Amino acid sequence: MVKSEIGRLKKVLIHRPGLEIERLTPDLLDRLLFDDIPYLEVARKEHDYFAGILKDNGVEVEYLEDLTAEAIAEPGVREKFIEQFLDEAGLLDEYRREAVKSWLSKYNNKELIVNLMSGIKKTEIDNLVDRSLADRVNTDYPFILDPMPNLYFTRDPFATIGNGISLNHMKTETRNRETIFAEYIFNFHPDYKDADIPRWFSRYDKKSLEGGDQLVLSSEVLALGISQRTEPAAIEQFASEILRSDQSFNRVLALQIPPRRAFMHLDTVFTMVDFDKFTIHAEIEGPLVVYSLTLDGEGQLQISKEKSTLSELLKTYLGLESVELIRCAGGDLIDGGREQWNDGSNTLAIAPGEVVVYTRNYVTNRLLEEKGIKLHKMPSSELSRGRGGPRCMSMPLVREKI
Ligand SMILES: NC(=[NH2+])NCCC[C@H](N)C(=O)O
Image 1 (cartoon, rainbow, N blue to C red):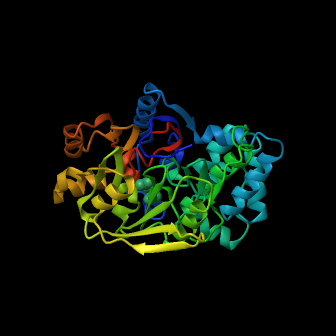
Image 2 (image 1 turned 45 degrees about the vertical axis):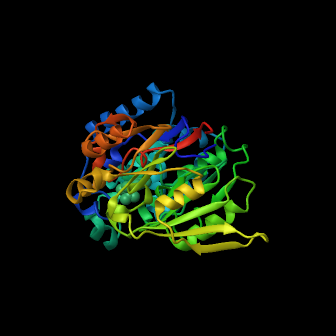
Image 3 (image 1 turned 120 degrees about the vertical axis):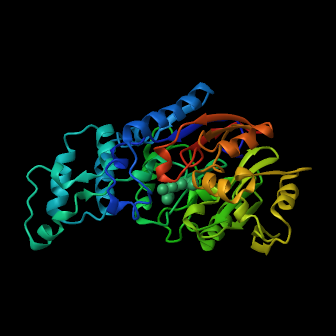
């Protein structure tokens, strides 16, 4: 249950980076959405430090790889998962398919999930024969299944909103493959399969919606980013679903941000750190176009373009007397550009006024502390190469009500 961005975090889903981030090659960086090839050993230490902050502050930490392994333990589910995973990875050649399934058969469920996440190299498959000209021509491509390096950004493939989930359809093929894990967790895991958890969106939809664009500002108001990754039509569909549900949400604010890689999701330029305090990147401030999506008396979706500033909108719809927008590095073009690029605006609140941040964003961090925000700072030299911050690397499963 998640009805805010800042309620005390009680349970969270993360993924410890695996071989998938070290199997990146220079030619794959663009398609697999990374800016460099991380050093896995250090990235893991940084991620373990992140997990340590969460555990030391009373958060129950679940790992994506563990929950998925537990989900496919149900009779018949492992086989179903493998077939679907290979279909969605585009491995349709029967000979290669059988070779991969034979190779996977020796692994237990956890090892199977980790291997599929890591990608499978052709050289790993025993006795794989290049039978055709096509096989031989493709010999320079090293993978039979691509690695999935963005999995540690658990924020995006699905979002816990209210007592349901938005099981998202991702903009890019590489990330859309990731949504299978949440599908199996919520459909088959013993802790979730019978919990009657509503779905606010479907991974089988064709319009893209990503979790970095989904913020739960209060038990009544959601903020969604119209961004490089999330389409207006997907927001409209999501809003229709959740506003018509029995949830307490009565408004979706759709913020139109520049469709740039640096601002790929709303949470790279705007996050909530306290009841009345937000981080923001100065370059999206204005004039910022905001639409309100609500239901009229007959339950029909109403869309209106807001005329006020973001501060005024937040005061009005969140019922606040004042709002503090804390600009990334104080709005400085150079420092702000650098620190936003390294996710200085992408904070994870573990309680009201208490957030996890990257140590490297020291200008923004100082400003947050001056505003009375308690910081848990973590190293990120290797994790940052994937272009995500503490909020990106976490999907809250339970937050206390505020
Ligand atoms: N919620 C976020 N800001 N996620 C960041 C995801 C970064 C990832 N490399 C991508 O391009 O998708």
